[in-house]
Image (cartoon, rainbow, N blue to C red; front, side, top):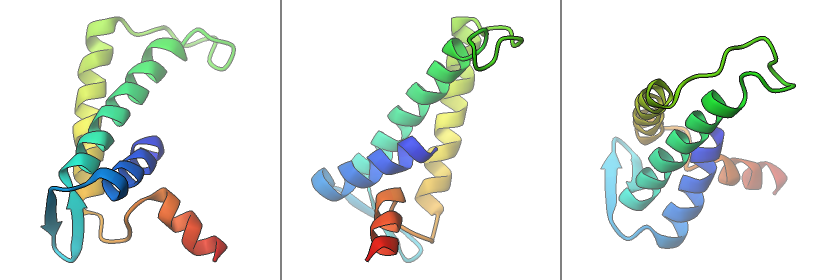
Length: 100
């Protein structure tokens, strides 16, 4: 979710032209779509590439179809959680706020 949130913040702030509001938070459709795509991609890669590697040698690898299904469900969940999250606009903004 961290990768998706970071990229969603960057794309949403830079290219987000279609806004929607959830409670007091304003989001963009472009940022939310980025959150979904990046989350699905990262989850899929982790499920297919990490098992059996040096980082996780005893775990059995997933086949493509179950990994895609799990990644799709996880991407939907991550996107919905990010959309309704009242605490911020993304990871980079949190880091930037902390540094200032």
